[in-house]
Length: 223
Image 1 (cartoon, rainbow, N blue to C red):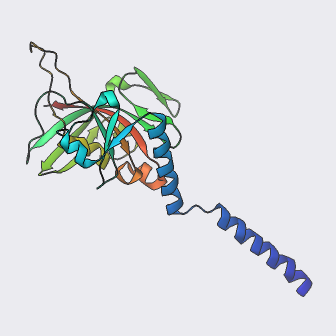
Image 2 (image 1 turned 90 degrees about the vertical axis):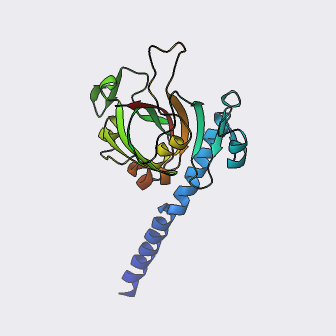
Image 3 (image 1 turned 60 degrees about the horizontal axis):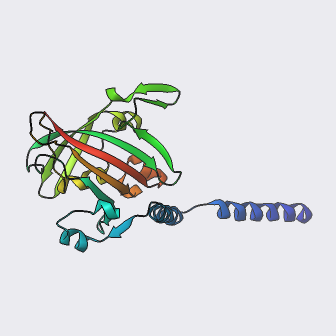
């Protein structure tokens, strides 16, 4: 009996050891995410500035230097490409916003969803005309706190959630949300930002799988 039990015990110990070796903790995943963000920043030649410098620059980032501000409170990195036409989002008023965007998984360096500058997108063997899927969200601002929900669009469809990633809302305190006036004497453009969003500020999918995303997003007011 002892001769039989001994190899069984050894097998169980070996199995337990292999299982522990293959188990990745949440801390391990966060460290891998941090490494992926650092590699992305280095590869893209991004100059990171802090809140103090961002405020000293009148809440702007120098695109010519490829500057991104990193917000300590949430870990989101933001570059304001265009301030946009119109004004800041009003307080205590529901505002409808249209978004064109690109979403990339930084861990895998792969585009997940987009509706920005392509006519067609294929997901799960289904081809979509993305011009039919401009993302629309309703936003509400109280002080610096902004809440929002998707009404329709690619994010709503592919992530199966009306919840807007917290990272998407960070720029709304700093850019203008307006509509270009075709009758204006000067060419008007909507606000555009680039973001690096850690999983904690991202979609439910990113949060559960612990991966960071890169976004390019434009914001336009709609009726």
